[in-house]
Amino acid sequence: MKIRCIVNGKQTDLETAPDRRVVDLLREDLGLCGTKEACGSGECGACTILVDGESRLSCLMIAAQLEGKEIVTIEGFSKEHLHPIQEAFIVHGAVQCGFCTPGMVLAAADLLKRNPAPDRHEIRRAISGNLCRCTGYQKIVDAIESLARVEEESDE
Amino acid sequence: MSEVALPASLEEVYAIRKREPGAAVLAGGTDLLVRMRADGKKPPVLIGLERIPGLSGIAIQDGVVRIGPMVTHQNLLDSPVIRKHLAVMHEAAQVLGSPPVRHMGTIGGNICTASPAGDLLPALYVLDAEVEISSPAKKRVVPIATFITGPGRTILTGQEILTGIRIPVPDPGYQGFYRKVGQRRALAISIVSMAALLMVSPDKTVRSARFAWGSVGPVVMRFPDVESSFAGRTFGPALLADVGRQYSERIRPISDIRASASYRKMVAAGLPLKILEQ
Ligand SMILES: Cc1cc2nc3c(=O)[nH]c(=O)nc-3n(C[C@H](O)[C@H](O)[C@H](O)COP(=O)(O)OP(=O)(O)OC[C@H]3O[C@@H](n4cnc5c(N)ncnc54)[C@H](O)[C@@H]3O)c2cc1C
Ligand code: FES
Ligand code: FES
Image (tube, rainbow over all chains, first blue to last red; front, top):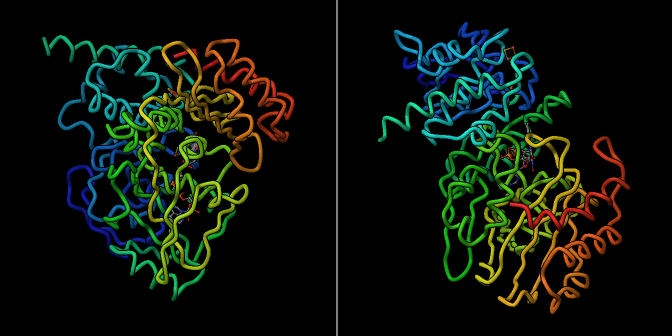
């Protein structure tokens, strides 16, 4: 089946089985291996992508659903320089093995779009679908919180 | 391999199902795609409902809130109508899954999955929701408690599709609550859940109380005789403890991988008191 969509800002024509999982399509057909798969059943958030700006799980989406959609993976999230969310993760030591990081960063992007000044409780809720086996979450929450403060100050 | 169709109208859905009786309906996919992978089975055709305009949207008219089956949990949370008139549903949607599951999963999928642990279901039961079922031949409207007949079972037959949810707006004097206990705070299937609608006068007299319980039986449970016994009593911790005690005695939960029956009874006994926690 032919599918037209925008992947990381580029108009893309895909030729694939209509029920191919989006995570496989991204990783194996398009070589976008920043999107990870761990559980394959919606529980871990490692496969998070943005579809029309909203976070979704690519392990629970099939190729046909992408027709006409705009998809952003971690590869397309930053342009020339790292995105401020990525910078904050580095500065705050929120990355250890890095397996959860693409999903965490995109979950944070979804949150900050909906709520530019979240508190720690709201941040925890927003990343509650993303598992991290390394960091203990505190540093991830710190990283996202640092951006919330910046937004708040720039509002005043 | 499954063929995938994303029709733009119900007529097309019916036509595909007529041609391919084994076709499966796909809403947000958060139950169906997990189940398909676990079972290793693929239907010949997946019919995605996501591009049918009439199946989304939340509207209020003549005292009834009508919700399209493709409304996502996030859509429920974002809706001022739900927050204002159906607070119990807003609270239930808040504790369902995780943000991406709420962005993808739909109310129609939650209802048709018919899990006794489905988080929107106790809210729908306590609100006396009705569902609208459509087929090429006719449309019928039935109470949610009639629609769901057992764990994973509904009265849908043949080409029928769930096409709407209708909820009478409760008297503004009611306050709605949803409380759930799972194995962890997020992404947890409930061990016991409870939806409540309470009408309490300024002098703390209970005028009306409705409770619906999830994960304590094959389907969501309400007991009208127990509900009616609370009217006239004084609202407070003592009453809520008694509510818990009465339901804990009445329910017949099962033991499963998440919890034992006796633990479920204990949790149920304490759940009404959680109404007092914000
Ligand atoms: C990680 C994870 C966590 C979860 N946590 C929770 C939770 O905390 N609480 C909870 O309640 N659920 C939870 N779920 C289950 C699921 O997300 C919800 O039940 C969701 O509402 C299902 O909706 P859906 O649109 O994804 O359904 P789908 O998977 O698309 O469909 C489910 C079933 O309903 C049928 N169906 C859907 N729409 C219609 C229709 N209009 N007419 C006829 N049949 C239809 C489908 O054919 C299928 O059999 C979780 C799922 C995952 C993966
Ligand atoms: S791989 Fe998709 S949620 Fe875990
Ligand atoms: S950094 Fe290793 S899983 Fe999060």
